[in-house]
Amino acid sequence: MHHFLSIVFLLLAIGLHVSVQSTGKRSERSTHRSYKSSLTVGNGMYLGSWGFTDMCPSGTYAVGFSLKVEETSFFRYDNTALNGIRLHCGNPLIPDEAYVTIESRVSKWGKWTDMKLCPSGFLKAFQLRVESSQGRGDETAANNIRFKCIEDLVLQGDGTDRGEWGEWSPKCEGMGICGIKTRIQEPQGSGDDTALNDVEMFCCA
Image 1 (cartoon, helix red, strand yellow):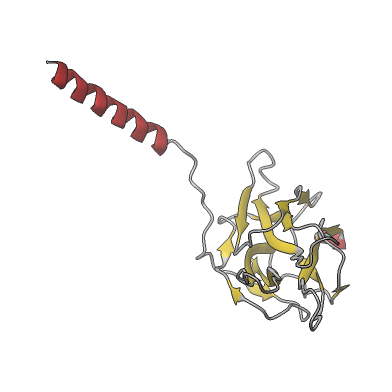
Image 2: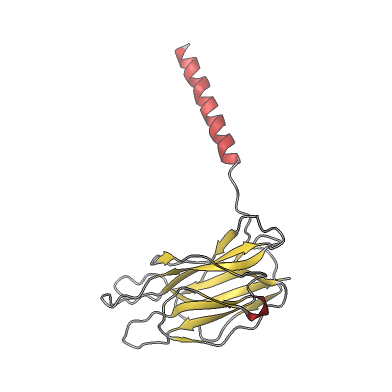
């Protein structure tokens, strides 16, 4: 009898666990959403490999962003600066709806900055701050990013300041940015690390 009751309690516990798990909010982001155009810039660096494309859920667009940044240290030889970019997707017609966060490949150093949001509308174009090759010096590649919202309002990330700002990407064809893909250099062990080198954005109708 005692063995029978133990089995019953075990089955009830499993059923409760499954019930709780099934009520969790599932991410609706997709790598398969169709896009109208892609945005690139000419000053991205070439080290590492491209990650997967991550897209906002259908009907939403990037309304803001945050960065993963390793702050510059003059006591450390190997700085990596920008390590990741997150886009925060939403629909201004449903202002109380929670944002969905998307990201492509991200490197391991640094911390995430606070989110920056367009006052209205979506992200429409971007600009990268990139340090060119330093030869035998410390390489950092991408350091920071800016985005334009509607009416050309500029949001600047809380990245680092090495390198120079390049040209702006074209503006989105369509409603706004809806996806991202990043180029990340894998950790180099005892070699020089650069983390995020380049990024491509995608625009949806």
